[in-house]
Image 1 (cartoon, rainbow, N blue to C red):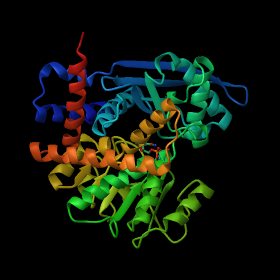
Image 2 (cartoon, rainbow, N blue to C red):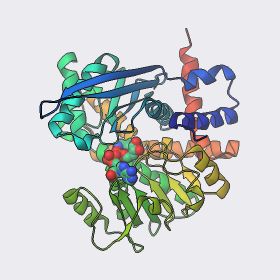
Image 3 (tube, rainbow, N blue to C red):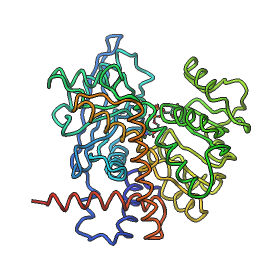
Length: 412
Ligand code: NAD
């Protein structure tokens, strides 16, 4: 039976519990979300009709700090997926040692079917419905799939109507509206640092390394730009409409321009056409899922040609595929470290908002580098100590930090 997203995350957690020989008393506590909210969102569409959507916010753990995690707008959003993503955030914030817990939210909607005004109404309605359980010291949302700085700006504005001026309630805001320099590129930059560190251990460099990237949105396109700047070759990339490939390396600055103009990588000149399925098993050194979850499965994992899988997306690898990668010695660089650059710079944004003091882009990037590299050192230490996979080591790191905070705070 194929495991759900939440079951998969819990299986990775159980593997970490095993290597840590964790006292059984803690297991249920660490697995179970603290709070789950489901809300009905009714809005009037531009044509005067009425439409109803379902929104969720799952708050998983706040022992290390306020709940923190993105908001996703997608037709596949459901409680199981949001639970899984919320749990991943708990371990991610602990791995990069930022003072937050884990949460996630989303609305089951295809935003491409809504006008900008409808999307704004839907976002504002969602804020109203969850306003009592979020806040700068309580739960701080951020962008995720199909949400961006503009959505975060509406979010901040709507929350502030009820609670007064409060930019620290949400991160990933426009730079002109209390956002942080470097936030938009942060997840891609963090992914670039992660693979650079992993390659360096094996005496390799980014220059000349061949990448295939599924997804050319915020994370995928920034990662592609930064890798390109460092001399890496992007041999294939894709979006929801299809993919493009070039064995000599795609001209990324030109592809970014093309995508800004046409809203898709499809139709880019100087490239072959490739399907999303073929991209995942294409000839490359590093495969980067940077779109949806559960795309690497028991059906394609044994055909993956890459030596490394860099999990820019959340939960892209099923438990069955993970076993196959471990058996085949394909090194999976886990989401809870690989894509943690976004939440790390979200922490810097929240810090700037609460201190009412702006950092330079250089300060942001230097601090991001330090959090990512320190996390790599800690994960590598645990891989050696326990002789386990990088994923299990990353989960073990996150679990041990959350457990320690839980112990120190006490259950009283
Ligand atoms: P985005 O909406 O900006 O981009 C998503 C990309 O995936 C788009 O190019 C889209 O066309 C493509 N896509 C959608 N469906 C697809 C399909 N069926 N096949 C192939 N491509 C498809 O989203 P994003 O913010 O870049 O997020 C991408 C992933 O990264 C998500 O898993 C998200 O959870 C994760 N992530 C994002 C951040 C962040 O800061 N934005 C942080 C950590 C993790």
